[in-house]
Amino acid sequence: MNKRILFLFALLISVTSFAQQERQLELNKDTNLIDVTYYHDNGVVSQTGAYTLDGKLQGEWLSYDIEGKKSISANYDNGKKVGKWFYWTDKTLREVDYTNNAIASVNEWQKDTKTSVASSNK
Image (cartoon, rainbow, N blue to C red; front, side, top):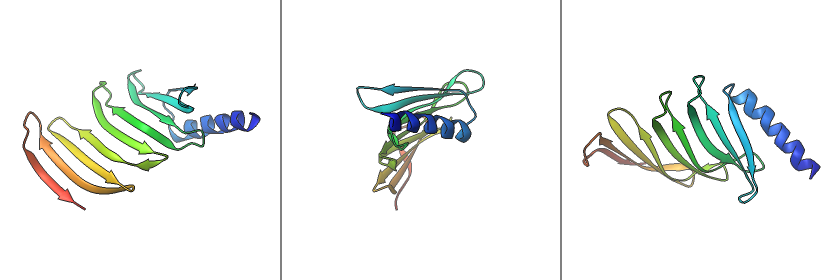
């Protein structure tokens, strides 16, 4: 148990040095993950997500702009990029599909349309 406490302390230190923004960390006993919320300087949530106990990103991570609008939805599995990621801007929605931690395809849509404006497989 002491190793776990030491690891959590080390994670807190590394998160602090990684991003100097305010954050909230909590061990989720149901999932055995560390749930984290980061905040912009104005107090608005900037990111939410979870870390494994060994510090790898896990599950869905959401990013928000300074006004609180969702800008990115990302997915991780044990630190690796997986599944569909979405990037929102004022004019477009970009969908990036990851397989084996690499980009498998990219699609982009204009806001308020259902027509894809760009698609590529890499």
